Every structure is written in C-alpha cells, then in structure tokens.
Length: 192
Image: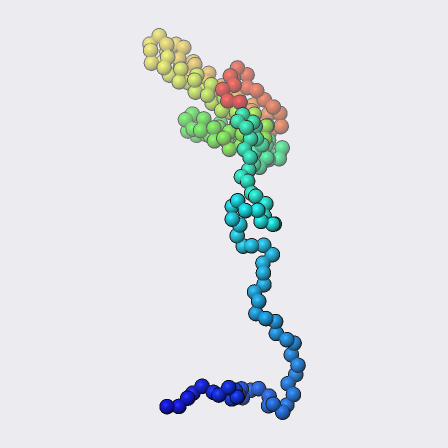
C-alpha cells in the first residue's frame, strides 16, 4: 500500500504561486479570525440590569373619567365640513330611506368624530339628538294613530316630527358650514 499523505518536509505546491526565487509583494499581516463583538448583547434577560438597556414599561393609562384627546385632531375647516355633513348627510339619509336610516348616519358620524374636535362633536351630537326627538314624535304619532281618538293628535304629530327634523337639519348644516355653534330649539340633550 502506498502512503498518500505528504511527508512533513514536502508541502504541496500551488502552480499559480510565484516561484521561490521570485520575490512576492509584501502583504499586510492578516488579523486573527476573531468575531467582532457587538456593542450590546443581542438579547436582554428580564431582571438583570445590562448597560445600554432601559427597562421598558407599558404606557400609563389615564385614570377613569379623564378626557383624552383623539388620535388625530382635525383642522377647523375640516370640523366645519364634517359638522355640515353630520346634518346634511343625516337629512339625505332620512329623505332617501323614508326616515329609517337618519339615526344610523348621525350616530356613525358622532362615534367616528366625537374625539376629533369640539365643534364637530357639538354638531354631530345635535344631529343625533334631533334624530332621537324626531323618532319619539313619529313613533308616538304612529301609536296614537292606531287608536281612533288618537288619530286627531297622531297624524299632526307625525307631520310635525318630520318637518321638525328636515328644518332643523337644514339650519344646522348651514350654521356648521358657516362655523357657527348651533343648539336646535326645543331639543333635549340626549347625547352631549
């Protein structure tokens, strides 16, 4: 059998290497193969104080009953526009749906924009309040109309409720567009 390992004095020759009699250019010494150390450890164990790491606590929550500003307050011109839409959009929904979807439109606008600015909150809450009062008048009128004696009061009550909703929403939309605060007459503040 033949021994395939070279003897210690025999080193393999690289054919591309310069010959021993030719001088090789001097190369800088190669650094040892040391891994660079990170400035901070890649992980932190809880309970151990490590330099460069601050203990991260969850955000503190405000005490109950404290008003907190909304995530994205809107500009005054946007508040006027959304206040107008609270009235005009609700009125359009009342007319197009026969009075059934007006409350939902007013409530959705109120819930979305109630924390985005005081002006838009005021007008959206008024739109909801007008819808609640209009619903009370119309439903009360319908219930009175069912009885024979109540028809004399019920039918005018339905008409007054419908006209009240239409007129107050038109006035509210104009006032909101002009940037004026408006409290509808004879409207209880169910929602503030």
